[in-house]
Image (cartoon, rainbow, N blue to C red):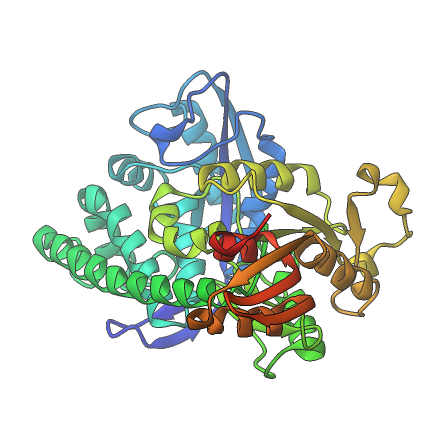
Length: 443
């Protein structure tokens, strides 16, 4: 765990000892009103295992897990009073210093639980925001994290006030941390407005970049998937072997290594090039504060011509992660886009499995680390975005010679003649190119 002074400088680095608490409910008690986009088929064991991974990502030592079955959460302490006493005994016997809840708590619940347990209490949202704050490197990424933190804490200032003054820094205070938030609600609201203005300016820049890419008629391929499945490793492999420039992205074996969408131009040959986008990874029970804050980044995938859905075949939670990914893609409106599924990290399998054994041949087994089957991956991407072409005849006016020139650079031109009424071309065009020249098509 990283601790900070009041100016957010790192002063010490050590671990903390945590007990994890989850609630399994019947029906829809934990719905959007709790602040999460939650799948009703979510398995509590998978979710608690993921909470353990998130805790370990910030140097936490998990001492134990406690799960309670409830019809609905307790409004005062989220869990039942008997379970609070049970956890208090565990805290004392295990010498824990932090209790982490798998669900989002209100300020009042945090305050009541800390009074009962005598140690720091945080929830899944605080934990994920802390990880995001530690991973954010760009100005936009840092602003997005701060916005999510401020929006989360604004209605909880009463609950956080005493806790922050008593417990000081540490997990949950990374980034803007307490910085007087608990004492000045107006300051928080003003800061939120300032961040929204800055992010709106950043979105204008992103939109201009998208329009520029669209005019260039270069296909866009977006890597999407759960956090830490190897999207950045795939990106770096493509950059190393086909990149227009050697500008690698950060690649680490940890959760949320990528928080900002990264764009790189990939050139397979003189006629085939596309933009590859590395996107922020998904996770279950992602707070709506984070989804809203990172909406612009997440929606980069909306403008892609092809989604590459990356999954970790070596992980034990593939079905769980696939379900979460499906829900998030539906949430941001990209579920119906053309998709290629790749199963990464095949090098980590103790026993190789055949591709026929998995999901009907629509998956490609790869290792971005060793390069295994990456040639097949490249061929599959190229087939998806370049081979779906149609033979068309065009008459392009001489004053639009720029279009003819662009088609010569990006498409397979079968025939071209200069006639009185314009440039007569026969070419193999992709759908995106067809839309740009439809007024010049001759039957």
